[in-house]
Structures are given as structure tokens and as C-alpha cells.
Image (cartoon, rainbow, N blue to C red; front, top):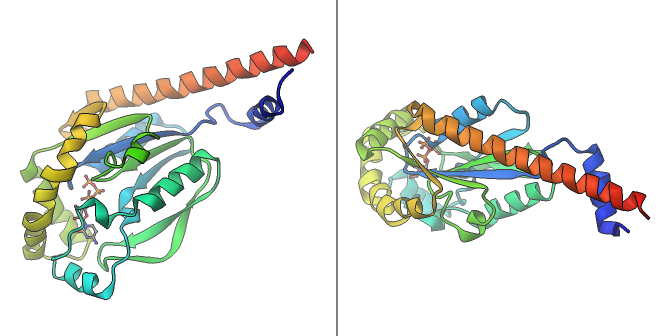
Length: 245
Ligand code: CTP
């Protein structure tokens, strides 16, 4: 006889789309290594509904007035794990796994603080989590279905960062270079680069690496298919069992 838990599974499954089980893909790599472009390219190629990019940038902690003053002088370390609220990120991923809505903070790089309001995410089937330290926290690693590390030359990263931070994050070149040398570069060696060791796949040359990206996309499709098949098999088994009672 199906247990009440099994009956609940059947009930949910009947009304659920094929990929009820959330898959989370983590993309780590240095600042300016192309994580967000790779994430967007994966989303475009997957071409499925309910795929969401979650940037770890949303989880920078709020600063007290003294730290905020330092941030505006490019003297605050945003590249150490302590700058990020991993507990809040974990809670979001757990809520999404449990099928609940998650509210994502909105962060301003120009103001070094969270803005009021949130963006809500509802029942995605795939979350692409991208951030310099996406593969750092063991609790988050345990939730990932695939771990990607973006590999790019440091001069390419710095060049991209200068252009982006001037155009989009309200910074000046001198400040960007000061922060890079004081925090971004040393913390890359200390915290970002070691994540290679836990990655399933290392992608050099960013979005230009079409073979790597299509391999990732195929793997995600396979994960989704396997989950769907497992789900259908559970349904059939439980259906048979309930007929025999
Ligand atoms: N950062 C900052 N000021 C803040 C918060 C973060 O300058 N108030 C910087 C950190 O120094 C960190 C970087 O933001 O190095 C993280 O963003 P980054 O990885 O550069 O951007 P993404 O778009 O997520 O990644 P990519 O450039 O690889 O696409």
C-alpha cells in the first residue's frame, strides 16, 4: 500500500511539469572572467522555461558607516568570503528546493549597499548560480548538480573589470586598480583559484569556448531527462502498487 508520503508524491507529480526537481548549476571564477556571459549563454542554449540566473552579487552584506566610508575609498575587501551573506544565499536555495518563492535582495555597486525591495523567484527548474565564490561554501556545494570554474587570463579579467566598473558601477580607473591590487588579486589566489579543485569542468576562454558551453548544456539536459525519467518511474511504480491493493 502506498504510504501517505507516496500518495503525496503521486498527487504532486500529476500536476507538476516534467522537471519538478530543481537543478542548481554553480559557476565560479575570477572577477571579469566571464561568469555572467557564460551563464547567459547557457540559458539561451537551454531554451527552456523556468531557468533563472542567480548572481551572488545580490548577497553582498550591508556595511556599517565606517566600512561604507572605506568602500568609497576602495579600501574595503569585497573579495573575502566574509563580505558575502552565505547564510541568506543558502536559505534562498533551500526555499527554492522546497518549491517556495524566494525574495532576492537588490544590490547597488555604485552605492555599496542593498537597495529597498527585492526580486522574487518562483519555482524555477534550473538555477544558475554565478559568483566569484560560488564553489566556496560546503553547504552550497552539497546542493549543486554541476560545478563550473571559468578560467581566464588575469590581464583579460582586469581589462574587462576596468571597462565594466567605469561604465556600470560608477568607479574610476585609479580606484579600480587600487582595489584590484589590494584585495581582488590576493584573494583570487587565496579563495577563488582553489575552487578549481572542486569543479567538475574548467572552462577556458569564456563564451568563446562554444564546445565547452554546448557540453555543459547537454549535460544539464541529461540531468533534467534523468530526473524526469526517475519521476515517471516512481509514478508508474506507485500507480501499480495502488492498483494491487
Ligand atoms: N565588488 C565591488 N564593490 C562592491 C561589491 C563587490 O567592487 N560593493 C566587486 C568585488 O571586488 C568582486 C566583484 O565585485 O571582485 C564581483 O563581481 P564580478 O565577479 O566581477 O562580476 P560578475 O558579473 O558576477 O562576473 P563576471 O565579471 O565574471 O561576468
